[in-house]
Structure formats: structure tokens, C-alpha cells
Length: 366
Ligand code: NAD
Ligand code: WQD
Image 1: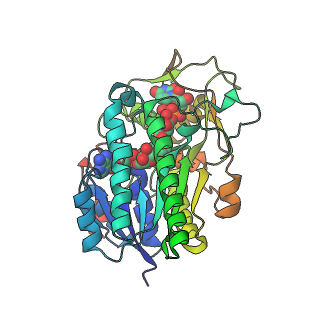
Image 2: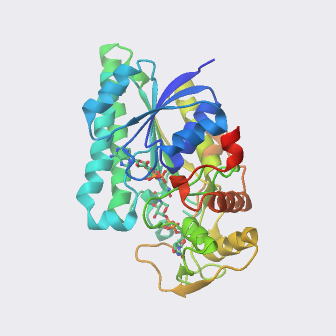
């Protein structure tokens, strides 16, 4: 039985593809739209290999409202949207901010306009812990709760906090207008999911993060060191006020994160709450050295690293307080750092060229 139909923007990307898989496994129909700017269409095959169901796929740019309109027209059953499509490189956002605002903010506005035209009224949005900026500037805000004041420190983060405001203003207006007019438009709902540091891969070893170009995040870089594509990891600073001097983050397995999207969507559909923000994190902080140790353990030997200066814009501690999601969504992370490291290593060993190569033979035979 199909429980609903979801348009997943950016569904060929890392988190979007895992969420598309979780939705299909939960008997949702899935339509992916993605420009393939930072992804490969091969992921659609991998999703089908894992769950036996294939999402529909459209290559399009979310800033193209007419193209979005056509997808909604072709699929009148779509009743929800999960919105991942975005540019996400923090450093680059400082170099080409207009492009980040055009794609991230402009694309989100096109999407909301198109949803309104087609009466699709539930949207789950990929926000980010980055909207909090440096929460250590406040007393008692680590681990970070949702009511921590917003204060992103880079243009990428500001596009995310701006989209949160756009979604909030738009949905509040739609609900108020509908109440005044006595119509049924007060069914608009939005989930602002602020995720911490996603990592890991599918335990099958055939789906994982496949960034085009040079990775920016710690775990993909460590994986490149382990597979021999990179000589060593540069550790950005060991003079932070932490147990070993390196910065603290809340790493969350991408399978747990994907489930978080599913439960948030179900919550919107069941409770009609308007706009809600939830942190998706484990509540557990790990240092860079913790991660180097955990990954070295699954690889089976020490990985070379060198401590260098702090990276500009980095903060000491981004650890979530996930109590709200635990209580309201009945969602908690289940997988450990060790699971994430083991799954990432299996993916890396199986697919050193990411999706640019065939999946392992046992999957082709299936
Ligand atoms: P990703 O780059 O793997 O996925 C984003 C997808 O969007 C890609 O497939 C890309 O091709 C697509 N895309 C980009 N511009 C597009 C456009 N104009 N039209 C259509 N598609 C477009 O990144 P991800 O890590 O899976 O991130 C997904 C979302 O989660 C993003 O919104 C990101 O900002 C957010 N997020 C990511 C992290 C993280 O650390 N990975 C943390 C917090 C929030
Ligand atoms: C993690 C830790 C680094 C690389 C970023 C974005 C954030 C969100 C998640 C999208 C930090 C250290 C890293 C390296 C290192 N994305 N590090 N050497 O910076 O917490 O968050 O991704 O929303 O917005 O800013 O993640 O993986 O880059 O870094 O020492 O080569 O690893 O200093 O402490 P970050 P990250």
C-alpha cells in the first residue's frame, strides 16, 4: 500500500538519496529532482538494488519554476516535498555569495511558489546546525537546543537561516489567510531540520557519499587518506578547550538522519503543526582525534595526520541537544560512530571511484 508521494529535491545527493531509500522502504512513492551538479544518476540504480523499488528521476534545476511545475503536473499524487537541493560548500559561499543566495534562497522560493500552485502543502527542509554559529558565545547553550539564538557565521549558513525565515513567513501567512477566508489552506506545514555532522554509508557498501571534486568534510577526507588518495589528514587546530585540544562535533549516521526525515514528515501529516524546527543530532560530542582513532580502528592501522592552524570560521563545539526530536518525533539516533566508520570504510573500499564504477559483482547478479 502506498502511504503518500514525496518530491525529493536534491535526491541524488548524499543525504537525499538515503532519505529517498528510507521513504521507499516505508512505502512512500518517490520522485527525485536533481540538477546532478554534485551527484550522479547512478544512485537511482543503487537505491533500486537495495530496496527493489525505483524512484522516478528528473534532471532539473530548482530555480527553474516551470520545470518544477511540470513535475507536479505529471505527478498529481505528490502530496509532500523534502527539500535538499542546495549548494553547500562553506568556503565557496564566501567567494560567490550571490550564486549561493540565487540557488539556495531563490530555488527555495521557486519551489514554494510551485508547491502553492499545485496545492502541495507539506515541506521538510534541510537546514543545518550551522545556523547557530558559535553557540559557545552563550552560557548554557552547549549542547545546543532549538531556542539557541541563530547567528550563522558564513554566507552558506545565512542562506539556510534566510530560507528558514522564508518558509516560516510563507506558511504562517498561508495558514492565517486560510483561517480568515474560512478555506482549508491552514494545512500548510514545514519542518526545519537542523542537522549536525552527517557521516557513514549504507552497510551493504553500495551507497555512500560521492562528492564531486575535493571533499571538505572530515570523514570523506579521512577515507581518502585511508585508501591512499591523500597523504595525511590536516588537523585544524589542537589548541581548543577540549579534552585533547581538537574541536568537538556531533557526528550522526546518515541512516539515522534519513529516518529523521521520515518521522518529521509523518509528524507534519499527522499533527498539522504549522512550522517546527528540530535538531537532528546524537547529543554526543566527539573530537577530531576521537574520529581519527575510530576510523583508524576499522581500517586496522594508524592514519597519518599533521596538526596545522585552526580553519577560519571553525568553532569549538557544535553538539546537539536532540531532546525535542526525541520526545516529539520519538526519534533517537541508534547507530554508533563505530557503525558509521565501518560503513564508510566498506563503501570506500568497494567504490574507490564512487558511483563512477559498477557496483560489486554480487549486486549485479542479484
Ligand atoms: P549533496 O551535494 O550531496 O546533495 C545536494 C544535491 O542537490 C546534489 O545532488 C546536487 O546535485 C543538488 N543540487 C544542487 N543545486 C541544485 C539545483 N540548483 N537544482 C537541483 N539540484 C541541485 O549534499 P548533502 O550533503 O546531501 O546535503 C543535502 C542538504 O543538506 C543540503 O541542503 C545541505 O545544505 C544540507 N546539509 C548538509 C550537511 C552535510 O554536512 N552534508 C549538514 C547540514 C545540512
Ligand atoms: C569537522 C571537524 C574541523 C577537515 C561543516 C559545515 C556545516 C555542515 C557540516 C552543512 C572540524 C575538523 C575537518 C579537515 C579537520 N554542513 N577538520 N581537518 O565544519 O563541523 O561542518 O559540515 O550544513 O555547515 O560547516 O564539518 O567535516 O568540515 O569538520 O581537522 O581536513 O573536523 O576543523 O572541527 P564542520 P567538517
